[in-house]
Length: 415
Image 1: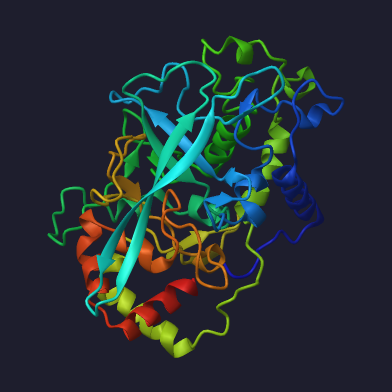
Image 2: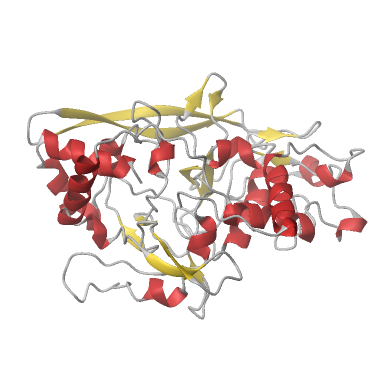
């Protein structure tokens, strides 16, 4: 994913450019003189896709001068797997005029320390969600929280093209080979035929569903897959349900027409991050050594390096991609567990996060907002949070020498 694979034909480039404009569009509330850009909300978390995915990448911090960044979302759920009866499955902190927002999201940090084998002490933090100024009364007493940070969009198209059989072939839910790794597929339907591959918990089956769900939950915009113009407004949120809608007859009574979704999907499928990389001057020998350490530590048991896919769409030639993920669910231990379960995933299970693009997730000092809730400020912190099936690999990293850890981080920072 270092080089763009953009359409060579004029129509394809035009669709890509239009899709980028939709990704960067600032949506407005209805009614508006520009019907193709209205329909925001009534409840929402951001006014544009790019607000949660700056430059197509992920944010590098959880909090900025305005508070919690819009990329960080709060998911809600109850013990039986149902949504909160009033606030639904996502907490929306913004709203259009005359509609109360659901409330305010703040964070407090719970800190702990880990000692490495050479005596270095690493301070870890865990963000705890705090909600206040609730606009629609109290939540259900058994509602629990899960923080989710927006990932980078690059690589979604190629991952969407990985044959399902390739993903299923690595599943070993009962750990029959005895290696301590029991990844299982996220199967989303009763017939066990729909594979989830997108989202931190692998709750969306394909790129189109992922994009349409983000429009619905994050921006409150309707599309063919999620046609309710009121997004996540529950029946008890009467001000939300009575607000003007951006659904337009000329767009099939939707706010995001099929044509707009088509060009947006094309942009997301083919998007790559800019070739600006602060680690380009890294020592190749150190990167190569770090890759060997990565494999020896056992990280590749879940972070599968590569696949052969027919991509871009319509291509008959195979292309090797290196996402470094098996796209399966794994038990990551109590440190990363939450009370909230999503889709087919249990509270402690997470989809193996693809590692490609880590170079753009970090600033020039090697710092960012990593893992599902952005808790890890650098790659070493992210590794130290691994537990469960990844505990043995994590412990091998703890036992590395300082020089070996530098090489490992150099490799990961080069992806």
